Image (cartoon, rainbow, N blue to C red; front, side):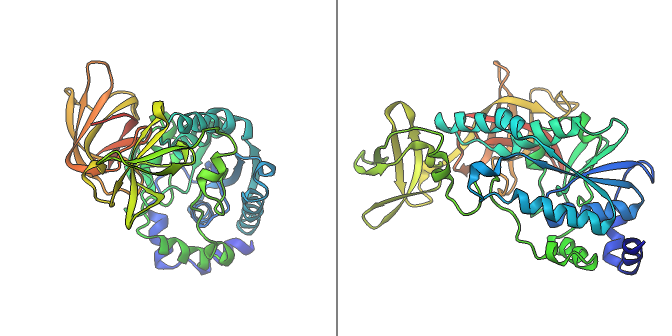
Length: 381
């Protein structure tokens, strides 16, 4: 077979090192690989096949591209998936979760933004769609695989070796049962450049040079998020005031378009203004001058809807513990005390003040590399 011959010729030391890190049950087992058309899932599929698994690709469409005036790249991504699978000589399948995504992710995201929150639809998508509806479509005796940069050992979700790309934050609401069926071929890879190198060696030159997707599919990368939300959320303009003296400094165009800690795009004087508060009852945006204003820093938060990946706290948890915590994906881990509150919610109190904590964000905690779970920020302390 052409592909097998090419893989054997191109199996460099880097390639072999990645292959030996995979930990799956038996050679020949069926592994269903979630494919996006990008380099990560494409290389993952190749690694799995080389390891001896019976690999089948699956591509999920979550958004109706006709609603996005052609901005969303799902059609092109599906074509790329087909080309990769053809080269690897594996079957691939297209599944449609537009309805499920709308009901379980998109509508809730809109509701949260309308209430002044800052939700994370990617976490919800992983929980409800990729490791929910999609995993339910996979045969019970098959393994599931994704291109996430993280590791799963006996159902424990661990950070990926590539710390700059570690994506365990996005999987913090995925239960142990789903993780125990999942293989993360890129979990031990130490750099994104290694993945691109492997893609080149496999002859996937177009995929290797494909620009990494950084936007949410239903928004597209050519549009500002606020412009997209305007189609679905009706919020009137309102006043923008200076937190320090209450002075009116401008007018906002709908509170949903502003995020705590980000630049407000308000022009007033020579200062650059940053969002400090959104007062929904008054339709008022409160800003401060400068990105390091003290009002942008807080000591912690209270989280609702807490999810332990293993359903229960770790063994030895007596109501509080020292953890590493993050309130956003790219944030460096910060030491914090996690404590159970009398009402069943959890508080996360950081050792050092954290910038731009916002209601609706996901706070996630780790015990060293082990991701324990997280919850939705309900109060800022």
